[in-house]
Image 1 (tube, helix red, strand yellow):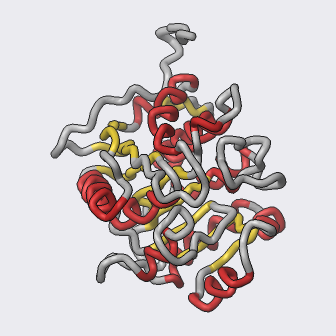
Image 2: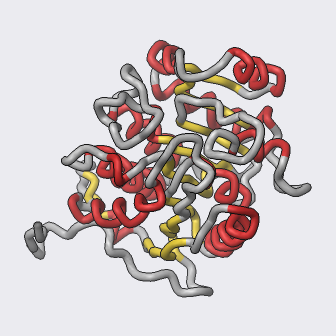
Length: 299
């Protein structure tokens, strides 16, 4: 159904195409990874679905005073990386993010399964990592369950992330194994479980995460939407009942993105082809894009 038009109610999305060599505040880039997913997924359809969902929202923060993000930020859309899976695809994605990172303050990568975190963080030159995720993603091999390990072990020299600068927020019971919990502990990764988030509160958790990951100079934020409750995110294959509320995820994203050291972010693990009829998962992903921009505008 076509959306209504009101000149006094401008919509989000439909941002101009990125032009090589031109600077912007933020750039959107689709990295539709999906071929190595551990579970069947149609996540490659998600970047387009998020773009379609964005115009359902305005780009206005209520303040006060009210602020239109479209007026205070220059936002561009760099399209999608072609076939970002496999070694050649990964390098295409790395190159695309690297170009954008040189010309913008914040690169927002739309996945795709969680394997996009590996090229997105590398391309942005990240030396710190914060994940909002129910899972460690420390598995061996190459899949959507391995990007954190790969950033520690597999990235080329000079692009690896010191695990002592990694913070994983939202790690959930019954969604991981003791072996990977032990790996995280042995490597010195700061793990903030779902229960700890609720015990300490968002402000305290974010302050600690930024202090740890910000020991470097460039932070990548991985937003795995399966960290939220399954009733909110049925389009995430691995979401479980009892995860974060939508408002908690949105608050975490905005608060983290307000930090100057956050130079890139990805939105992962949404399968637009498996979403509910009301597209609630994709719409939450679109709101995460807007929360990232809200954080950027507040700097």
